Length: 285
Image (tube, rainbow, N blue to C red; front, side, top):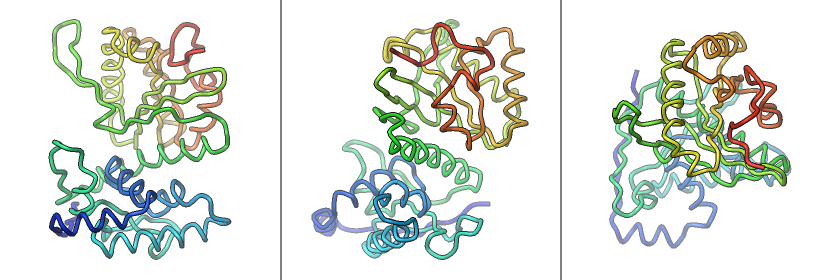
């Protein structure tokens, strides 16, 4: 199933006028959508309107701003909406319309087109967005500060394996989180249960091959731990067992948990690992 998105456009003079009218928060919303491609009203509310007294008030304020950006054709809305108990505009999924994409496009970068999007791609993209939003919400509690978040393709790392094969490591997210005592570095993989375990293990072997190059250690000081966020406890158990049984994988490198356990993982990663980490694993004192 694919969803067709409408075409639109705006001349350079109109874009200049629109840019002058944008608030810093407007700019941040457009930049967030540029990085993540798609986000729900609730996700945007939790990131940019958390200061309101209640979630309902935050949702209303968020919708007002999004409708203004929609009026200027800087953002657009998918016909499809998220499920569950959410109704109305709060259930909408947002993306950059052509003028918004032009405003946020880095100089020299290629135009990003939103002609069609498949349902599996959209579902996974929103799940990755949700992981980023969860990190932001957790950071607001004072548990850590977010030093850096890379979203794909900025999180990707091309490299040569020891066999001389050219490949690309493609984490869904890279996160550098800091506390007064530690710097934690993570590669995040968001799994929806649609891929077989051999596919996930192949991705784990790509991480192992990238670790062998030493490039991540030179960049971060340690090799980041790999956090698999999975849909069910049963799938967590199966992937943990498969990693531990794979002779070519160091299971100290990988942490498996459900998406709902993300905050607990960040508080005590070793509790979710297949074996306690004693050497590396993305944590700098």
